[in-house]
Image (cartoon, rainbow, N blue to C red; front, side, top):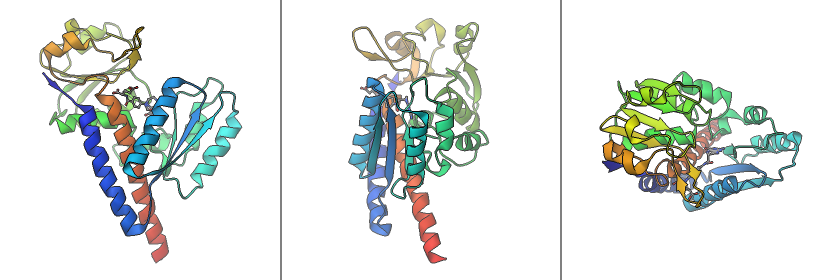
Length: 290
Ligand SMILES: Nc1nc2c(c(=O)[nH]1)N[C@@H](CN(C=O)c1ccc(C(=O)N[C@@H](CCC(=O)O)C(=O)O)cc1)CN2
């Protein structure tokens, strides 16, 4: 069994982003900028935003966060997003999810300029992903593809079982795998007999947030396991969806959780923001020339 070490790969990607930022600064004087919108007091969301800010600092991005109270109105958040769409210092905009129940999340995601949509949640970018066109791809599934690539795991022709059908993880994960010529099954809360599907899979990618959902008897020998779930036990320990201790014995490759997919999410956010900044810099240079 070999570990898919997301922490190590994320450091490598950060270094590459950092080098490219230096180059961008020296060639055009541009500093990539990321704006984060955080609504409410959810401690996990606040921790993720903090991790994103620190990562921006490490690679030399400009970053700004708009932290808003739980009771903020839809209109006030919309106004903030419109302001960020028009702010030339901001290349990427991210709305930390989930949002409080009184907020219309879809409407806000649709308001983000697709060219600044570094989370890849705007329907424009979702459409480009599904049609296998270049665009912004959600960070977590993009990070999973990078991790598989790093360990030379080719998904072409493989039976991949995606467990979880969320807009952030499951659906874009399935689209990326399909674009890479995998045979893809998506299982979800209404799937009858999950084990029947997982037992048939060469690669299982699970992101539902249910502790020990995937057990040893549900996987075949030499399976590749990508654990995208994050939960906290009663004792406060972070764990994934997979019974790591027992499933790892049957796996060829497996992600630890924490230390697997999570750090890749942040690395891909940096990579997407750099991509947005480079496109902006190129567009600005072309406008100046003409
Ligand atoms: N706007 C978004 N909201 C959310 C996203 C997202 O991609 N965009 N994803 C998740 C949360 N998330 C980033 O926002 C995220 C989750 C986990 C990690 C991570 O590095 N986890 C570490 C453990 C960290 C810890 O010690 O707490 C790991 O797994 O090793 C980073 C980002 C939902 N919302």
